[in-house]
Length: 174
Image (cartoon, rainbow, N blue to C red; front, side):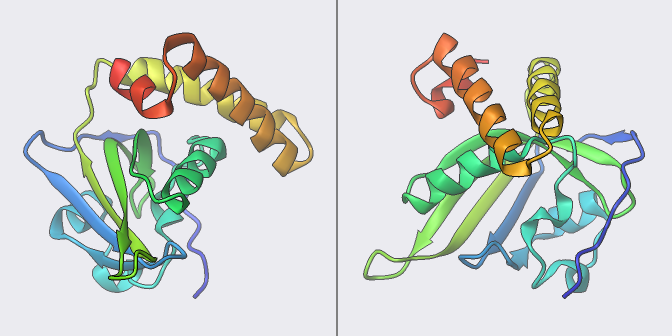
């Protein structure tokens, strides 16, 4: 399947407090299930997203180092909490507070991932947005994408260490 390229519009949508976005992926991050709330906020049809990588809704201003940390955490068998800015099919964006967990088979092997996203604490978004802008700027500053992501990962770890010991504690401390 070809990757869909979406251009951000700068228009923000807000998830209602009682809404919950749910999606499931296979171990490689390809979407296998989305609920109606996912489809409603994102403007995608189920046929648009099933089989696509979940990064189809990734906003380009969300730093890659956040996803690096997420994948490392999930691959180690642990859950992950974070704030994310996502894109709709037409380029609008929406913030969420995400909780992603690995799904296991009866032998303890990871067979996929389950993600619940809810309305974020909007009072925290300016702080997260500022942090993400600094991290993204650091990533783009490097001509080598990998080096940029690693440099931003170091910046993120310093920000976390200033407040807490672990990223999930950091997210909940905001």
